[in-house]
Length: 116
Length: 114
Image (cartoon, rainbow over all chains, first blue to last red; front, side, top):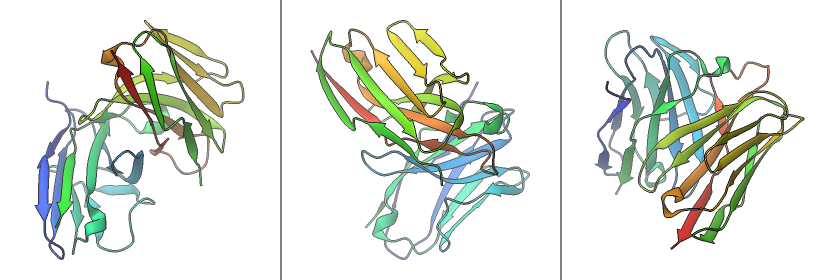
């Protein structure tokens, strides 16, 4: 009965490198959401995906950030050419249906990205 | 866009005291959810409110949704050290195309001193 699985738990990158964050939703969940959290701040919505589709990416920076949720495999949040300001906790959440139908979110343990 | 404001940002209480956090939205909400995040942990769903004026209780926790569906509150009676953490409200958009996106408040960090 695995929950939402995120890896790695901690990721250290140097400026200019690429960061790949992975998220496997709960079994039976086809909706994935990515949130970003800075220390002592709230959760900022980044992107909402269903299998093979990006539904809402209004929270994603226009450059360097991309997300996918392929037919097979985990959802990937990719950050190219990381900068220090990208350091944050990135949480993935999943739900069986879209949140507009009042579904709650199940969060993963997050990936703490540190950019040196 | 929709904004959800939460106050206070920090709250320090002595064990046994009550605690309340408030959530206000700039727009009417379809629903509001509350999450708790323990230090170093991830957000965990507590409850959802959908109806105008709705009140729900979970043991020492009381959740309210305003009549206009633009505000909400979480009240904890007689806090315990296990209540420590950050409490987030998250509002769902009523109409429009922003489906699938909950807007989270900034959270209230609760510290309970034994």
